[in-house]
Amino acid sequence: MILTICPNPSIDCTIELESLNVGMLNRIQGKVETYSGKALNVAIGVSRLGEACTATGFMFENQQRTFEHVLTEEGIKCDFVSCEGNTRVNYKIIDKKSMLTEINDVGEEVSLNKQAQLIEKAKSLSADADIAVMSGSLPKGLNPEFYGEVIKHLSPRVKVVVDAEKVNMLAALSARELFMVKPNVKELENFSGVKIRKLTDVISASRKYFEKGVKYVLASLGTEGAVLTDGTDSFYCKSASVAVNSTVGAGDSMVAAACVGIYNGVPMREILKEAVAAGTAAVTTSGTNLFYKDKYKEIYSRLQTEKL
Image (cartoon, rainbow, N blue to C red; front, side, top):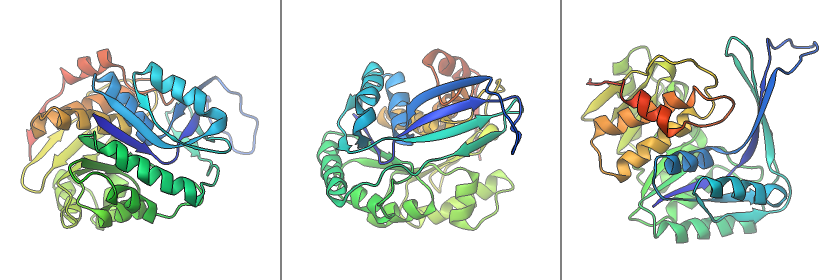
């Protein structure tokens, strides 16, 4: 079983415009609302690829039933820590040039009591998990050390995967050795101090993670694909050429597919190929909708990996 831990769920409202005119009237051409959060996106991706998944994290009472309905329909088991109030709403504004403008809410504050409850729940659920994924931002009232506290209490036998910004990542790395991290180019540069200009720079920058005990680095290169490295072997897979509708959720889809590959014990080349196929398939859907398996399989058949 794959466990996902989502500390900061969101309702993502994706708005399509002809162009974003600041300070002027803008007319909406399309709008999609999805019930989201990075680790919840991972859970959906895992389930769509046919593996068992349990989703935990904080959930806010006024929208909890809707979130649980959506996730249950995807075949995901839900076990959340319920908090008072409303789920934050994030706005994703996309124009016809596929330029993305994001406006993210901070959401409700989470009490110390609820924080302690999630640490205990994640600990308990991880006893039956093979892989645990924690990703995304933290809600109001939590400091980065919360990442470390959750991860520190997970079962020692579980493979831990983290996708988070630098301060949360550092807290996670201080708690235990991580099995895999998934930075994008900006996050990799910020963490390592290495400027990414070519593929070999990705390998050089990844060494900063290996020094902290990370086993695998899955580096997302956007439309250029991704690199997977363990410090000894490194592989590159270029994305397939597709029509891009929205890049939101592509990274989460990559994490989902990579975790399924790890769970099934496939070689590094296949983990990478599956991750890129899922991430590429995700950009073909509108709003924050994730990939569908038929599109994933079609793109997977077109991809090639190379050893660096």
